[in-house]
Amino acid sequence: MKFRNNSSEKGFTLIELLVVIAIIGILSTVVLTSLTIARKKGRDARRLEDLRSIANNVAIAHNGSYPTDFAGCTGGGVAVDTCTTPDLTAFTDPSVDSNASACNKTTPVPPCNYPVGKTTLAAGATTENWEVCAYLEAGGPRDSAGFVQVSSASNGSLKIGCD
Image (cartoon, rainbow, N blue to C red; front, side):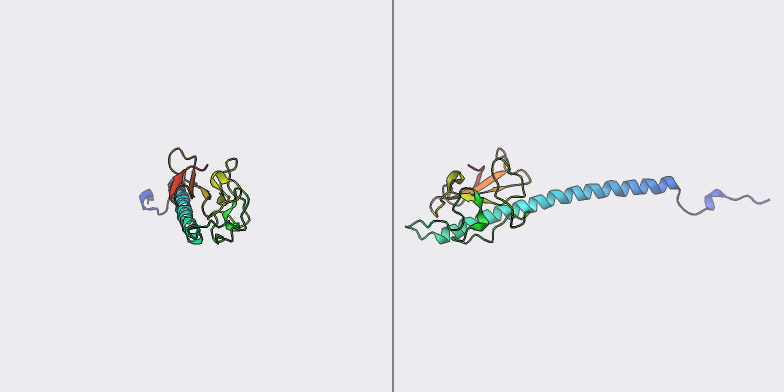
């Protein structure tokens, strides 16, 4: 009489397969979470670079002795990509389409474009009196509520918060 040896059977049990599937699911969740954070930080880096470039473009448009009025974006807190003088049409928030409205204190969370105006985001910005803000998804510097700005008052340097 021959007995069958159970150890010679090939294959996986249902429990073993379920454990492997659960481990793969947990690992993929961890990877996707870290990728989401990395994407937010990447968009924030782009926002900071955009603010620096906007400051450079405004400085180039300013001829030194006479302030130039911003054209195309004369309202207070309008989207910076509507400015034609200085040409700021290329600057849109990396997480939005071109039709998004500008960020403001009541709706700061993206998707929203960079708002521009006089200091305190009032209407009538000029190359001597202007401010552009951005909202950072990853939180930004401490006590900023996620906002950073570049303005004529800061001589084009980044500043925490948005007036």
